[in-house]
Length: 83
Image (cartoon, rainbow, N blue to C red):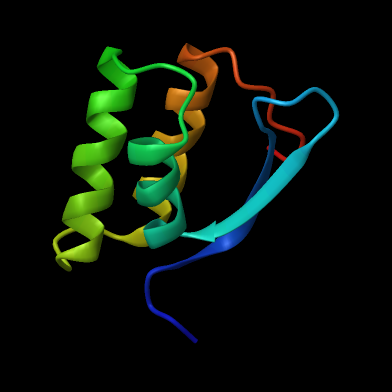
């Protein structure tokens, strides 16, 4: 098992109504936050990116990235199906 994987995946609505995506790792979260996020700024978005980087570098635990991703989603009004 990839050590950067999350214990519980996150399913969220993409920019298209009715379309969902499920991610289960810090690397997927980092890519999504940097390339496919509906907003370009926000305190929680910035924090989530920083935490993802720290996890990928081995300085933080993967579930911290999941929690930060969830907070960034709330900030950006991204609907999360599985909390």
